[in-house]
Amino acid sequence: MSVQNHFSEEVKTAEKAAREAGWIIMDLYGKDYRIEEKGKGNPVTTADLEANRKIREIILGSYPEDGWLSEEDKDNLQRIEASRVWVVDPIDGTKEFIAGVPQFAVSIGLVMGGQPILGVVYNPAEEKLYRAVKGYGALLNGRPIRVSLREEVQGASLLVSRSEPRRKFQLFADLCRLEPVGSIAYRLARVAAGEGDGTLTFRSLHEWDVCAGVVIVEEAGGVVVDGNGKGLVFNRRDTSYRGIVASNEILTRALQGMLAEVLNGKR
Image (cartoon, rainbow, N blue to C red; front, top):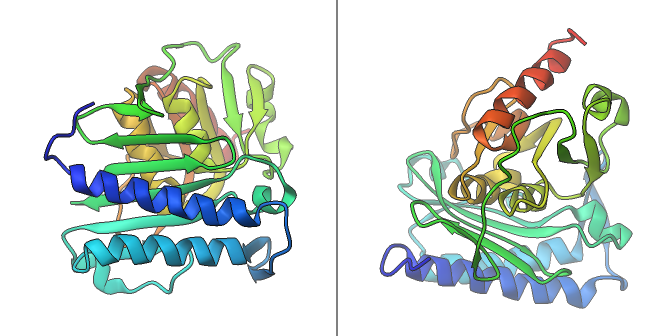
């Protein structure tokens, strides 16, 4: 992928921010750091806050007029009027980071017109950097990636949350092979690389969880929809989505139909 002048500086800036945040994260990984609770089951650590500070410093230092939406900063709704908005999760998968499970990632996306046009997902523990620019394909550590072409639900390999109740996935467990993976950003990136046929979640997620992953999946030939089967729109006042499904177009449609049955209480 040669982005030439098409967001080439933004890509370099996002990669630099992700890598420098990754150094901060790995410097604390497995060591002593502060853990606080933002809400029930929603921890934040010194690593989250320091990585967020570094990403904000690098990105807004380069693009001070752009909007900003991060899990670790108070939301400024002036971003809604901005033509470009950076959507960031400094550590998606904080619970995994705390538990010493290397399934967390830095997620940095750039949104224009409600759609992500650039995304970087970086797992510093595995040294895997996924990136995409709209119209230019998706890469893993510099190599082109594509989603799985599998069309049948039966026997499909699905990446699912480590923390969601297993009973919700029974319908899928009866048909598919389920692999627990922590971060949704990392799951989306792995699906983009064909390291799983698809991923889905029942829980409510936020824009920062999935923004970068969405454009990476799409540029790898895949589709991402919410629990109702609708495409995701970004930089909204309400930043949450109920349910996510990602795979190739055919398998996404089938999986979403099954997920909707569970969400609507028909299963």
